[in-house]
Amino acid sequence: MKALNNVILMALLLGSSLSWAHTPPKTAKVFFIGLEDGQTVSSPFTVQFGIEGFGITPAGTTGKRRHTAGHHHLLIDLSETPDLDEEIPRDAQHQHFDQGETEAVLTLPKGEHTLQLLLGDESHEPQDPALMSAKIRIFVK
Image (cartoon, rainbow, N blue to C red; front, side, top):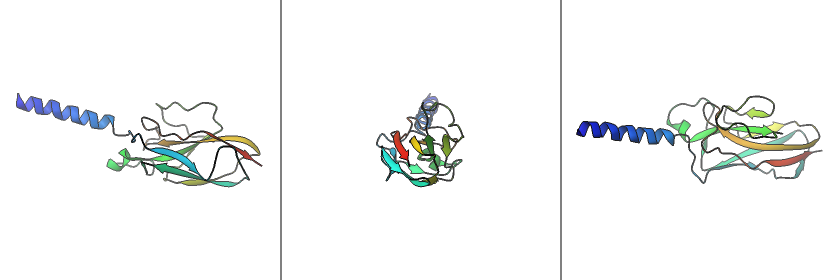
């Protein structure tokens, strides 16, 4: 009976650790550095990605590190948030920074645009809960 109890306890511990595997701390956040809502920029421009309370690692990272880090995705001019239970799409509006990049040079046409950061795990899926920045509006002159 003691052996059965140990098996049950191990299963519960393993299950609880797996459910928290990609869960960032409540204090974790992603944000833009030096780029604010309503700012006017000239294209091309550099955008820097900030993160606190969680790490950055390339896509496809294996081992324990993948549970405490992710990589940036830049959402451009999206009217709706992508499905947070699915892999983040890969297109012009969902830019992936697979190597763990923390900045990018963007070339956008003149006019108003929205930008938002979304951190993805080793498989390009959002953490749970998702680490997503506030959506900001910028104006390209």
